[in-house]
Image (cartoon, rainbow, N blue to C red; front, side, top):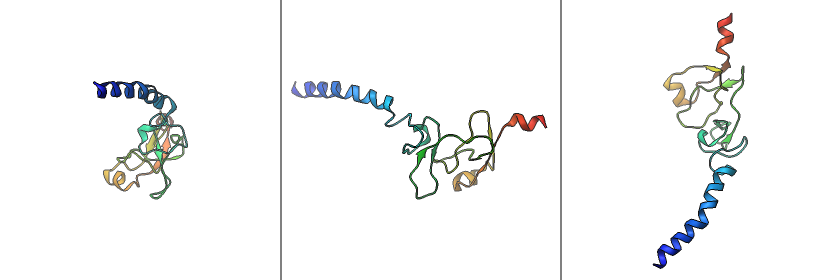
Length: 115
């Protein structure tokens, strides 16, 4: 009966810490500039690294006319995907995704249809 009581006490002590973890953003909901491992951890949805040797940090999504990447199969981007409503005009082949070289530019699809 001692082990269950200790386990119950541990759970009662850990419960507030685990719920606070999500509020503070220690694992998910990370702010711009915080270290990340995967894009789902970032509020922006983009975990960005400058090169293969740099640490990845949460970054804002790419705005119109900025460089972008349409998709990352690794969960970390060298160029962030576009903001909502914009499309990344880039090579969308699987080879580009694997080699992380499928960069493009964010464009507004409604602008190109008006021309």
